[in-house]
Amino acid sequence: MRKILLILMVSFLTLLVACEDMDNNHELPNIDDFSEMELTLGEKVDFFVNLDLDNTYENGFSFNQYFKGNLDFNTSSRQEYDYGDEFSYYRSEDATATLNFDYDTVLYVDIKDSLDDFLIYAAINKLMLSGLVENSYEEYHDFDEETHQENGKHTIDLNLNDSFFLILENDAYFKLNGVMKVSDDDNNIVDETFDNVKEKVEGVFQLEEYQDFKEGLDDAFDMFGGFDEEMPDFDDLEDLGEFNDLVKVYKKGNEHIINMKLTTSAVHSYIDLVADQFAGFFINDMDDFEEFETMIQNIKNSIKKMEFDFNIYVKDNRLSKVSFDVKLTVDNLDFEFDQSDEYREDYYSLEGSFKLEKFGFVVDFNATSPNLPTAAELAVYEVVDEPSFGGLFNQ
Image (cartoon, rainbow, N blue to C red; front, side):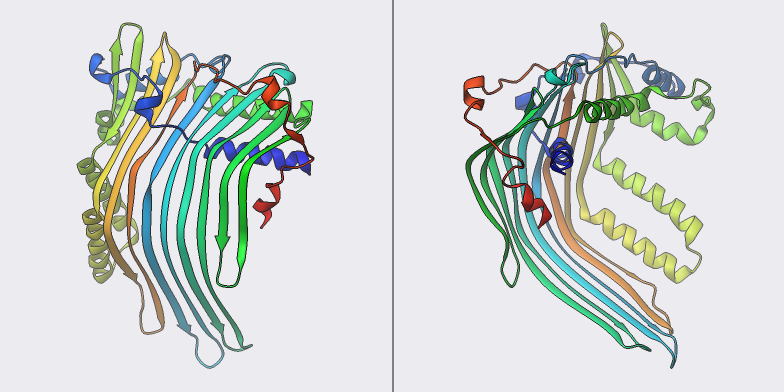
């Protein structure tokens, strides 16, 4: 059980870790220094499929992510059905939330043949989540008279900094600073303060578990190289013409950048495209169609900014880096979806605002090993069977 918990925590931290602002943390090639290549969609696909992905991460890789923004919304839904004297059904749910989030961390992974040389290092410079979540729920059944009612309010305050997680020579080290508090109407569910907690768990992986970890990572990369050689001729698929304009390939010497960029106006156009397809297949009633159109227009009006920039960096036909950056501002999103009729009430509404000041990641397949704590610094860590904070995830 102890090792299963630790492996889950490794996976959790691997997905969670984030980093300093991309501009300050990584020197990425400037796309303005590259020249766009005139390629058909089929040629672009061939270029991607033929990348050399063997031993991509043999020298260690880093995964860096940044995420800052806020969310404010409330939702309401109601379903009520009347089946006559024998049975009735009623359900209602409401939820509101105001959340602020900001994190800044870095992950470095070095996979070696020997379990004793395996290294994972996740440094948490900042991990902040704060806010209030309220919800109410009712459910009523007739016939056998079954009722439910739940109401809840949760206040969240998570703030970690100057912390790290390290697996070195098959031992796990945890350094933690900050607070983790979650409270509801009745009492504190979690209320913990971490003041320079330093703990060590020995023998995290058995050899079989480590091999499973490596195979999982290999499988993730094999997905990119596992395309069937007899792929369709993409140049003959007229419906993909817009996708060809979306994806561009740039070149400078032996370096290439595969770029996919979306602007706010392009996002609005794709929303229209998807909505038209959806409406054509699923909506036949004119009243429903007009309501659906109004909802789509409200969504578009609320999206003030939605920009995506995704890049795959290639050097000597080998994967070098991958970056993704998105900025999003949604203001006064307000729509309703009502499918009620004389026999039922079926209603859903959402109001809210959402802002991503920054969100993205950089994967570097030629990363420099970070400055790790010295052997003398790690020697003072307390040996434990489980991290003292491990039980918090079972609350």
